[in-house]
Image (tube, rainbow, N blue to C red; front, side, top):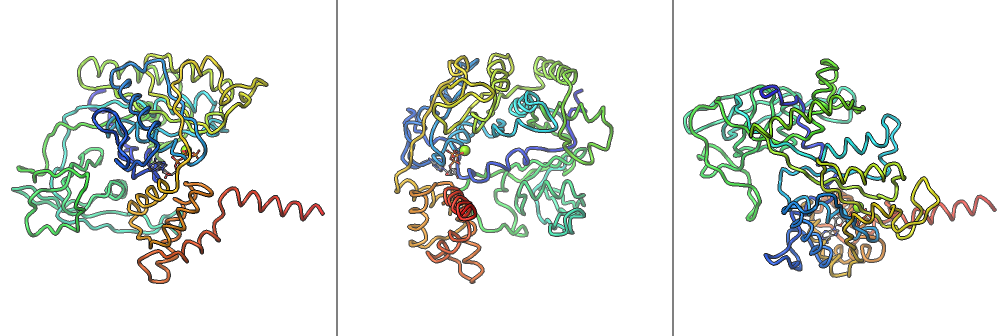
Length: 460
Ligand SMILES: Nc1ncnc2c1ncn2[C@@H]1O[C@H](COP(=O)(O)OP(=O)(O)OP(=O)(O)O)[C@@H](O)[C@H]1O
Ligand SMILES: [Mg+2]
């Protein structure tokens, strides 16, 4: 399968879209001895939980987590998901991270165990090295032609793009179709970036920003500090053979094999949600083993994060226990905000709604409520991440909301407050803008109270 292993659909961006509100988190923010720095890597406070998470990362790297998982316990909005994201970041940038909510296993199309199986396979990567024909160069110019989405007139989608690439000795213009245009957008490719474009599949890799770009390449404003790598402008021809390194998940491979059986249609419509037969998984596993043995591939167990794990019933939970034991398993991180509660599907009360045999295999990390100054720091980081300027008053008001209701709610108000400010042609969000959106959008406690009061009125 060596040359044809690459699936048509690059899925990396889709996989990451749900972690949007955690994009400021770059790691656990620990020093060399594993102690949590007050504010680092986008992380604030929550010292003990972060240090415990650092320990887990260490165990994973030393290969000592096999058969064990992690359970993060704490009230809503205390950073349980944030810590899981940070663990994944610490493990490496191309290590897969998959989020599943406990309620998602109840699907009408798939068995519960199939949903879990797919999630596990989405959390295991295969890093592949291959000689490919690619276009390589620094982007000198890039223009997108947009049009309306045929299925949704309110949405603009890229129809095509024109791209001029340059190396030290050559310059070439390429026209690309909608899929590649979309990938260029989702990867945020800009003038001044050095990219690889796979000639056969259109897969785009952003290598870094060009160092010492010639004057004709006008690079937009740059951050003073940025995590983007600086790279040399490539030399030689634009079209060339190159060793390509990329990561696919086992689920990508499962789908690719399933689609090849299913014909072209499914490829045009992208990922089709459906069950994958165990035959296909077996074949994929065999191929993967072969690639690893031949030194062409490397397995990267990633993180499967299951939020609201108390939503899983006994059947799904025993599947998870068994999965922890299997030879090829991602690192499984569970989270819940429940204490003693019934194991779903039974009448048994158990800590966090989990059976004891599963609890026995879990390292438990707990998160605690934030102090106001921590909430403030987190809001500042989020505002910066979203490019929103908050006035001192707006920040104070959001901090108060975060401390009194939930941090998550306060974080979610940043964008609407900014839109409210923009609509009045202001660059800085004022306290008034925060009040305004706070009145528009309820937090859950308020919305529940509201409906309850209303119900009571109706009953009278
Ligand atoms: N210690 C922290 N440092 C920086 N950002 C944080 C921290 N804790 C939480 N956040 C951010 O605050 C927001 C809410 O936190 P998060 O969603 O992780 O809470 P949670 O415990 O998972 O909540 P829930 O139980 O509702 O799922 C997110 O945007 C998250 O990235
Ligand atoms: Mg969460």
